Image 1 (tube, rainbow, N blue to C red):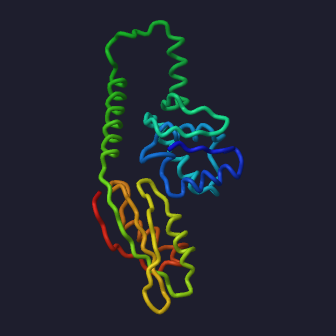
Image 2 (cartoon, one colour):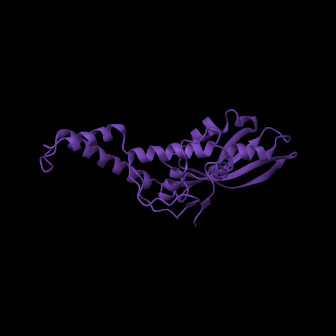
Image 3 (tube, helix red, strand yellow):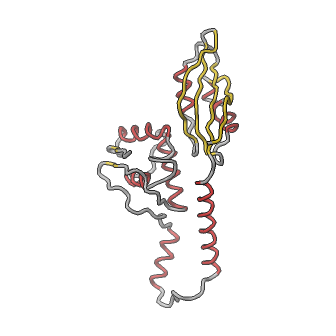
Length: 230
């Protein structure tokens, strides 16, 4: 389904994009696509860190472009005032621009000569990067159900859930949730999440994100109820 964003140069436009990315790692699908590049290009630069989700997404896409580029088609996102990305390549670095300039000035370059050691090494590094990218895409996924308990019956459960969902990282997607009575007026949060196994450790997520400040203001404990491979 195509998505439309309006006026990404304004605070209102960035807020809408930030809310959209709250439960998503990419603009569409489960890997970077031309939809991400369309939105990336529409932004005038790196967004303020106050837009937590947009900032996280922008840094990730920026890194992907510098390393490998993006080729997935996506669903056809629309940003008012900007055309969808037609072709996406890795942006040239300052060093590559300088090298290109030197090549233009050198009339003695043998275009059909044997590869140098540097060229062979660069080709091997590119091949290794492609293999690593393919392996990452093939990584398995798991569905995990968590039990998250508050400190007492006075804990604001809506804020507890908001705090939990504010934890964002590559390979993590929060799903459905519900409040379940425990007793004495206390309820716990049961929430589903889908993870990419090679990118997200559930133990690390619990120990370093869900049970530390500032989230532990609401969360007393977090337990794994079910863990199933997809």
